[in-house]
Structures are given as structure tokens and as C-alpha cells.
Image 1 (spheres, rainbow, N blue to C red):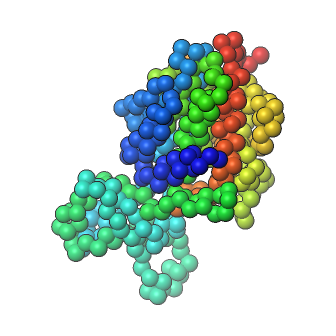
Image 2 (cartoon, rainbow, N blue to C red; image 1 turned 180 degrees about the vertical axis):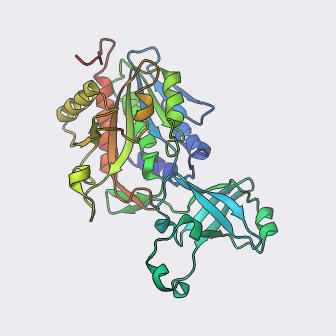
Image 3 (cartoon, rainbow, N blue to C red; image 1 turned 90 degrees about the vertical axis):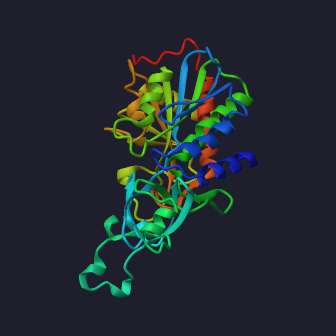
Amino acid sequence: MREESVEFLKRLLDTPGPSGFEAAAARVWRREAESFAERVEADVMGNSWATLGTGGAPRVMLAGHVDEIGVMVTHIDENGFLYIDGIGGWDPQVLVAQRIRLLTRAGHVLGVIGKKPIHLIRGEEKEKASKMTDLWVDIGARNRDDALARGVRVGDPGVIDAHLVQLGDDLIASRSVDNRIGAFVVLEALRLLAEGERPRAEVSAVATAQEEIGYHGGGARTAAYRLDPQVAIVVDVTFATDAPGVEKKELGEHKLGGGPVITRGSAAHPVVVEQLVLTAEREGIPHTLAASPRFTSTDADAIYLSRAGVATAVVSVPNRYMHSPNEVVALSDLEATARLIAAFVRSLGPDSDFVPR
């Protein structure tokens, strides 16, 4: 992967942006898009998009959500300790003893997540998993008034204070990988389209908002309605099954460095899926298939039902340790996924037909 793209990825992953509070990460994404896209816009939901080939056909939507899981302050006690709930799905065990960066009206406030020390935990309690209600955030405040004076309020969001690190030549570890790398990949695919042979299609890369809490479709639903695409590719992460204890019989075989994972079933349109597979084979891009017989748990579930229906597919990047402070992915998989999408889009034209026959 080119050095400039890695630097952009680092800026994007390191910028806090939990669901509903994605603005800072979205700004980073739009600034990068402005360096090559024809048009860059944002909407009231917090979605951002960048477009090439305005007026071309068909209309293509490339979606990756820019939000991440986080926490929110629910109570400040008289001693200045903060209590929190999750924004999105957390295993509370991975929060224990982490540093937290709170996004307040006065700026960022750092704290640590506290829990009763092991020495003070008695009997069977030692065997029990921690719950969110067992944890608190310590910002070093003397009391409630001191915490309020620092700008902290109930409803303030926060993220784990962890930054991207490289693990060897190809792997990176970071928070916010799920799924800010999706937003990264769709913009990288658009960059490839801008730098090489221009597509005949009108293509919009979209950094969607609120996917992690989007039980009714999040920002993807409104973005799809506005853009009215005929075909869409959603980029998300999926479970890498090359780590200990992960059951391949349930999830398939997807390893880091093994290339993009193309989903079959449910929201994945069969015509688009087959064309993606043929494109990967033609371009020599390693890939695997994943089965999703009911729903995909991605933005695709909202997009494919937009308006009169959108021919939608899901292309995922294998990810270890999902929804943790150190999600691990391979840079080569990000690059391969962007190449696959760009090649797929170049194969489209005004005569592309997505009706299953």
C-alpha cells in the first residue's frame, strides 16, 4: 500500500468518532476525498460522500461506515467518578483498566476505567465476568463540581484511548477498525478510479454514520434514499477465523492476508455477487466466500431495501478481536478489497442489468 494511503488510514483510525458523534472522523475523510473527487458533500445524518463521473450510468454507491463503538457518561457521582454505558456492542471485559478519551464541550478529557482490585474480590465473585455497571471512569476529579468544571456532562461520548500500531510489515492493530476501514476502502477504491481508467458509471463513495447503533438502518438508509443507486457495494469487517478458538464450521475459513470476503445470501444480490467473484478471478485477487442466510448485520440490510430496491453486495475484510481496543487486520487485504471494487465498477456501463433471470 502506498505510504500516503497508510498515513491517511492512521489519521482516520486515530480520530475519535463513536456512533452519533462521527463529525471529526468524517471531516478527516472529506478532506482526503477533496484531493481527487469531483464533488464532496455531507448531510444532516452525518454521512459524507464523494462522487466521480456525475451523470454516468449506472449509479453506484460504495458504503463503509465511519462510526465506531464507544461509551457514554450516564452519571457523575458526588466524588467525581463517572458511570458509563456502551455505544454499540461491548464485551465489558475488554474495557477493564483501559484509558478513555471523553469528548466534552471543553475538549478531550482523559480518564481510566476503574474496577474493584482482585485482592478485594471475594469467593465466587472472582469467577464472574465484569458487567458495565461494575465499572466507572476516574478522571482524577476531586468531586462532582470539579468534574463538571472540566466540561464533563451526562451524555458525553468517549472512546478507548488507543492508537494504531503496526505488527510487522502487513498487520495493524487499532480501535475503530470496525468499520472505519470500510470508509477507508471505499475512498481508496474511488481514488483508484480517479487515477486510472475513468468509469462509465456515476460512483459515490459514502462514509455512513451510526451503523453500530443503526437498528433501523442508520445513516445508510437515508444516504441510499438520497443517492438512489442502482447497485451498491458495502464494505465491512468479518471475523478472521485464523485465531485460536474461532469455529470455522460456523463462520467459514477467512485468514488475514487471504483477501476480501464476498458474502452470499440474504441482502447480497446474486447477480452482483457473481460479477464480483468473476472480477476477482479475472484480476487474480485472492478471496473467500461467506454465507449469510438471514441478514448481514451491515449497512447492506438497509440499502438493499431502499426505494424500489438496490442490487447490493457485501465485501468484507477479515478482522481479529472485533469490538476490542486492538482489532487486527492486514493492509494487503485493504488494498486487495479496494482493487476488487474498482475493477468491478469499471466493468459497469449504461447497459448493466441487475435483474435476476
